[in-house]
Image 1 (cartoon, rainbow, N blue to C red):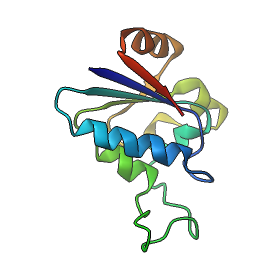
Image 2 (image 1 turned 90 degrees about the vertical axis):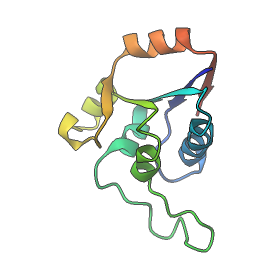
Image 3 (image 1 turned 135 degrees about the vertical axis):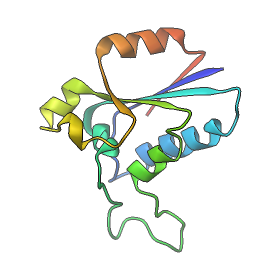
Image 4 (image 1 turned 30 degrees about the horizontal axis):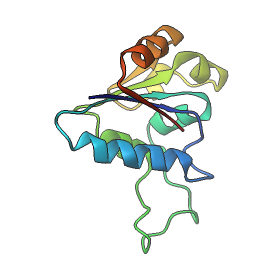
Length: 123
């Protein structure tokens, strides 16, 4: 099965993006499932090198210590991850700021993966 996850929320401030990445991590464990993630708008910050979890928002007691890049890195060996190039440009992010294995995404890639997917999840 092909699952395509589109994320638009920032990495922190609410639980939406974190939930998307947690679901992707769980689905990634199934070898028959192909995962692709497209980061748009403020979610491109999830793929920025050195991004840390927000102090005071996540706590060790609750087990919420994974930063967005660490959660992405956990699935990079099998998932495809794209960061929208236009969204990055609007935020003055450069390609060399992305964690390894994240590719620059385009609207053509977004359309292609949406069409090929068995399921599309939007966060």
